[in-house]
Image 1 (cartoon, rainbow, N blue to C red):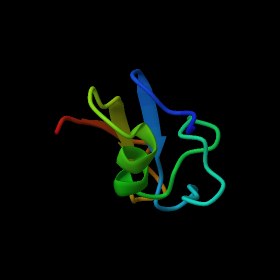
Image 2: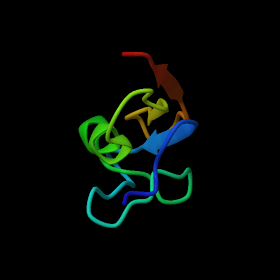
Image 3: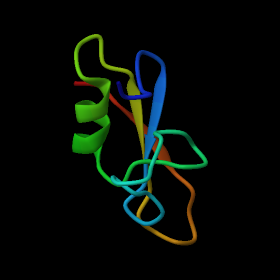
Image 4: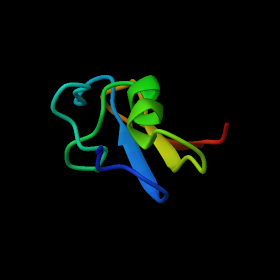
Length: 64
């Protein structure tokens, strides 16, 4: 069983890991696809994606 369900899930291309991430702000997944895989089924959690620039911290709520 995966540890992600309804709630908030975080991804970060720069700091995340699809292998070792937990979907938390501290240990995000690398990709949105992995966040969806770990959620398993609807209702999917809100997925936050960090910005790609180093000088900005940006999160976007992805609604599918």
